[in-house]
Image (cartoon, rainbow, N blue to C red; front, side):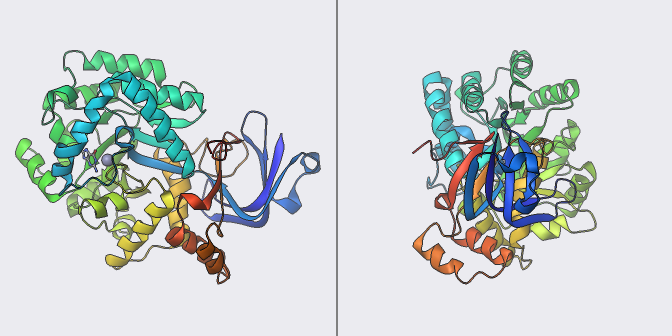
Length: 428
Ligand code: GUN
Ligand code: ZN
């Protein structure tokens, strides 16, 4: 057991209210779980003589959780696509075909998880590819690192190159085998992962429905209403559907454990139906800006009379940064552009507690509380010469958080802890 002392910030498990201690302490037990967290002056006597470290004014927080990104796009950032469908066809579907080779997938899994750790992301829900080899490589590497990673075989059987289409005859059985092998193993989780409506036949959506019925506890991840041409093509492919969401509803895929990436151009009716299903939207602002997809009206969707649960994801490689600080920065900028400004504390709460809840793991991660995994990060508000100068202007916690969002990136992450172990400095 050991004790970490620092300035601490977390958002309460039950209420989401900020819990901040200028001089805080976290006790980590030998299983990598939090034994105690609070103000250092309240540290119980039995813990006070434990060995440990004092990180002074650096900020110790729960690790970031990224609820939407693509493992096989780990290096495919900054490719010059016109818009979503052009970018998918010209680059993404080409790159993802490499993952049928397990050597490629194994190397990619290492680099992908390294990059998450470098940026302070300690848990994620990620898309993989249609290849079982890719999913197995990602899961094996996550187990080796004791990381909480949720993923699943990407399901697609049309409007994509032949090599990226599942075999409808076997996909149901293959999926069941993978679910039974991996879901709940160590810290892994399995997500039913139809890529999006355009790449799914009705028969494939029926397979998804059948899996979701047989395994109701599994999360479902997909994309929704990201781009206008995508919406028009979806309506053409599913002429019976009244709108985009109705395609997923028809197959009973809109549930309280469903995560829909983007949801930018939703109609009033779709917003209401999403809210009443308790499904969530994952807002991916760096990706939306990069692909010119549109401006997501976060506060309009989360505070209306039918509020939708909202998370924040990087959407690597449509997204332009692994850093959740950079992701928060773009979310802030988009919120300014739509005229409803989001505050720094809400952004940090979303990147930790809310995202953990969205991926179904709030019982184990997402806040600094006894019994949860000690998945944590240490942020340095003075990480660069400019940030050090800027920090002298900070008189409040909100302002310190805001400067971290606007000026921070992976350099601001001084350390990343997975199950209590420092893993970022071990990379370098
Ligand atoms: N919609 C379907 N697939 C993708 C993808 O890989 N990235 C993004 N941004 N949108 C998608
Ligand atoms: Zn995506």
